[in-house]
Length: 592
Image (tube, rainbow, N blue to C red):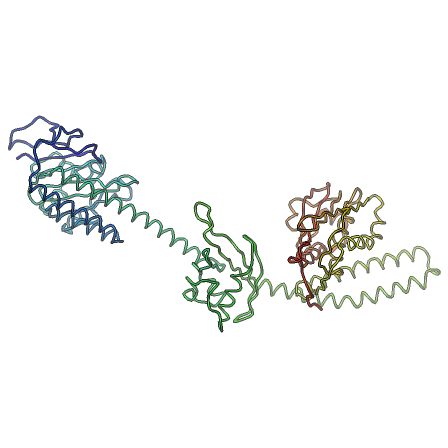
C-alpha cells in the first residue's frame, strides 16, 4: 500500500475518527500520498473490536506506567530511557528516542533512546537535524505530529537529509516512524520519535498516546531544567559564600544553622559539619569553648543591620565585628537571619597600641603641665604689683595656653580610658534638669566672652522624672555639647529645650552658628573630627568633645542625634535619655 505521511495538529481540538486526504486519492501501489488527521472528524462509523479494545487498554496501562516513572525517578536521563522502553513495548515498536534542541535552538539531536544503535545517536550529534526539516525537524517547528508508514517509498521529506543521514537510516534499518513534539509551559523543548523495522499504519489511538507520553516527557524535561537552574544557582551562591573574606553564619526562623562558610570555620575554630542543621538554642556546649563562643555571638540581641563588637578570649584571642542581617525570599518574606563575622583583631590591636601611647604620653605631659600651671599662678599672684600690664598680659596668655594643653591632655586621657573600659561609672538617681543648669553655670566664663550670643533655657512646667546617671560623667557630656554650641556661634541665639515623652527625656540643643558641612556630617561622632569651617574659626580644639559625649550618653542607654545642620545656618542636636527603669543603667561600672 502507499506510504502514509501524517501530520497532526498539537494539541488536538477533537478526537479524530478517520484520515482525510489532502491530495487526490491514488490507486494502490502508486506513488505515496500525504495525509493528516482531521480537526473535525465526521464520527465513528464502526464499533471497536474486542481485540482493539484490549490493545487500547494495554496502551493506557503503559501510559500509567509512564506516569509512575515520573513520580519515582529523579534523573532526567533515566526518566527518558525508562519512558522510551515502556512506550516502545506498548506500541510494539523496536526503537524510540527523544530529541532535544541544540544550544542555539536551530537544530535537534538525540538525548535519550531505547534500542537505537550508537552510530545513529552519534550521527545526530555530529550532524544535528535542522528545525523545520525531515520529520522530527518539522514536528519541532510546527508543533504537530509528523510521520510516515514507509520511509523507503516516501520521498517527500527524505530530500531534507544529506547522504550521511540516508546511510544512517539504512544502517539503523527502520521503515516507519512517527515524530511528536514535546511541548511544555516553556514551549517546544524537543521531540519524541518511534520507529518500526517494517511498514506500519499508525492508528489514531497510537498517535494520541504518543502525544500524551511526549507531553509528560516535556514536563519532565522542563522540571529537570528548572531543577538544574536551581542547583546551578545554589552552587553559585555557595561558591560566593565560600569565597567571602568574612565569616558567615545563616539561620532559619527556628534558629537552625543552614550555612557556615569556611571563613567562619577559621574564625571560630569549628568544622561546619559539627554545627550545620543544629539548633543554636539547644546545641550542647558543655566543655566546648568553641561552641560556646558560637552560641554567645549567635544569641546577641541585635536589631536588623546593627553591628556590634564581640571579643573571644579562647581558644584564640580575637575581636569580631558582628553584623546582623535578615534573609528574605523573592516575595520579601523573612525566612531567616545571618550574622557576618568581620575580623577586626588587627585594627583593635593597633587601636590599643595607639590608646596606650596616648595614655602614656598624656600621663607624662600632665605632670609638667600641672607644674607650669602652678608656677604661672604663683607668678601672677606675687608679681601683680611689680610687673607692667604688658608683662601681666603675657603671663595671662601663657596661663591660658597651658589651660588649653591641660584640657587636651585630659580629653586624651578620657578617650584612652573609655576605649580601654577603664572610665568607670557610678549610676544613681539624678535630676537631669538641675544637672544641665549647673553645667551652664560652669560655662559662664565662656558665655561672658560671647556678648552677641543669647541663650534661652526652656523647661516643661511639670516636674521631670529622675533618671539613672553618673552625675560627674554626664556633666562632662552635657558640657561638651553646650560648649560646642557656644564656641561655634559667633552671634545669634542658642536654645536648650527640655521635652518629656512617654519613653524619655529629650534635650534639644539648637544654635545659629557656623553649622557642619553636609559632606562632613557623617564623621561627626568620630575621634579627632573637626569641621573645616570650625578649624578656620577656632584653631584650638581636640576634636574629641562630641566623641566623648556620645560614648558617655551611650553608657547611659541614651542617644545623641544630629537632627539638622547647614553651613552658616546652625545646628540642632537631640539628646535622649530613657525614663523606664528597665532601660536605665544600674549599679557601678568599675574604672580606674
